[in-house]
Length: 126
Image (cartoon, rainbow, N blue to C red; front, side):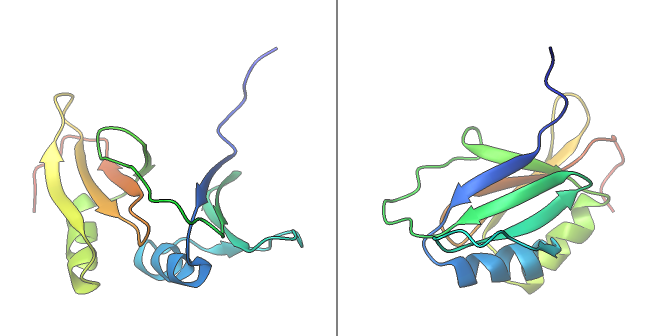
């Protein structure tokens, strides 16, 4: 008996439409078909067989921080992502190097959920 992989991350959001704009346009995740649940939401692909599920109807505040309560997405070029996020006027923490040499930046979604974008190699900034 074993766990095979992470299947999906689910986030409880206040405004499904605003969250769809953020995850679909700003983070460029492709939308997925969603079963006809009796509550609002949306699904996005993260990677093959990995998904993000947005669940509407959140009314309580989100208590998230970049050092806890976040999820990470591996990216190809963290500095291009930084420039992209600037064009969208997204709230984010600029790239910094981790002790293992990887680069990471953190961006905040419309509800206050933190998402890490990380580049695992030790390439220097552009």
